[in-house]
Length: 274
Image (cartoon, rainbow, N blue to C red; front, side, top):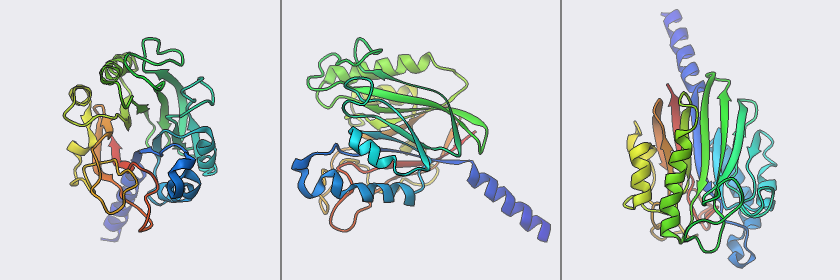
């Protein structure tokens, strides 16, 4: 009986050790005009949220260089990703953070959602901004499995840009190592009924729809800093390739009772790589 209990505990521990907690979090860029919701008043809450919920790998959107530096204070995480304006530090990032002791980066890169994805550029009917994706291939020391992790931020205005960006993303994914598990997440600036999300849902799986435990939290992911009001549309997603189970999925509405840490909710999934 004692041996059986020990083996059960060991199996449970092994199962937990290979669970992968991933998240996407649009952090809202640092704007003085946001007043009480400006980044200096939110950064500690963001870091506390990440650590409390024990994200293993998470993709960010909108963070400017100073915000990236603030997050890098969490020394347990390594970071990849460049600025969308110059391919170096300039402008917003779609950076990826991962636990440096658990994961070994194999390769990494960035590409832009435009007709010239290899260099900083604006595509199709996008009016204001360059848009990009950041990716990294990671080996998980806990399971020895390799997975491809992609953080995405699509244009908020251009209908053609969002449609063509998704097609570019799918073509890019088709050219990657077919043996890798695939995790694609981010702010797609599109609701589930739109063509880009339907296209992604045909090629990949929406983590919310395949969660073994019923999804936790609201469907919507945009809150506009309006605590106490119904959140806005669902525009942040986690999409998965085959070979990945979703144990649970959540849209986290953490706050201090007065303010949210960002104008988007973080979207989190607990995964198991088969």
